[in-house]
Image 1: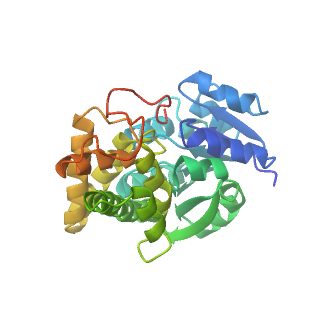
Image 2: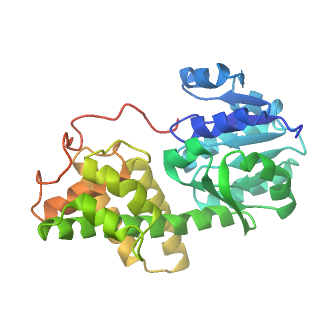
Amino acid sequence: MSERIGFIGLGIMGRPMALNILRKGLPLTVWNRTRSRMKPLTDEGAESGASPADIASRSDITITMVSDSPDVEEVILGNAGVLTGAPKGSVIVDMSTISPSLTRRIAGLCRRQGVEMLDAPVSGGDVGAAAGTLSIMVGGEKRTFDRVRPVLEAMGKTITYCGPSGSGQATKLCNQVIGALNLLALCEGLVLGIKAGLDPSTLLQAVSSGAAGSWILSNLGPKIVAGNMAPGFMVKLEQKDLRLVMEAAHELGVSLAGTSLVQQLFNAVEASGGAELGTQSLFTVIEKLAGLRGRMAGKGRKEPGRDKPSQAGPS
């Protein structure tokens, strides 16, 4: 493949995703607002860019992976944004999780300048990003998806074309609803088991291969039992996604009672200083409601807010 790739946003997710592109032998230029985060990529052979516009001017395909809708607007539409440097015929692939309606608006502005845009949010956390096994949900023109697919295959295992612009983002919001409620179920099941006198590790082993099994249970269950609240995906970013879910639900006239409950429980995690902990820290609220605080099997447990994780989110 001869396409030149640009990558913007080297946080917890973006950095391993970009490394996987580089390790597939694809030519890569990178940019990050915190410039020190470019070093692991440039050490492996990537070139560094001076701005999003500079990255786009040197790339056939420019990927953005940042935190929230305003960040995407700034990095693509800002004064030194991707669209100011992107040549006609190039492609912008936004892999952030943002509003489907904003995605469609940005895609329309790109088309006016002869630039294609795909929305391609991901699921699988930092583990999937590092392993190159992410699930990638893509919206946009099918022919553009076919062109970009070899690059997406460097980062993901399950790559699904979901429909026209905004469809990838809408699919990701559905994914977040299902994942958040799975996480709540895991936390409540563990609390019930502990109250019943069960060993939580044995409980996880017993249910993980049955009908209750899930990615959430297999990946976050052991972290909860070990008292490991370090982020693969931070609470504050989960809350951002759930805010987008509820905004979309309001626009569509859909009642999401369970999702609203999880959002409120995450509010309690944030109020305890846990905004930068992993989403598995939802357990700390559920155990407290059950009167189990301090009785969890995991040793070395850290209370939300006492120790911040060593890694920050995408920037």
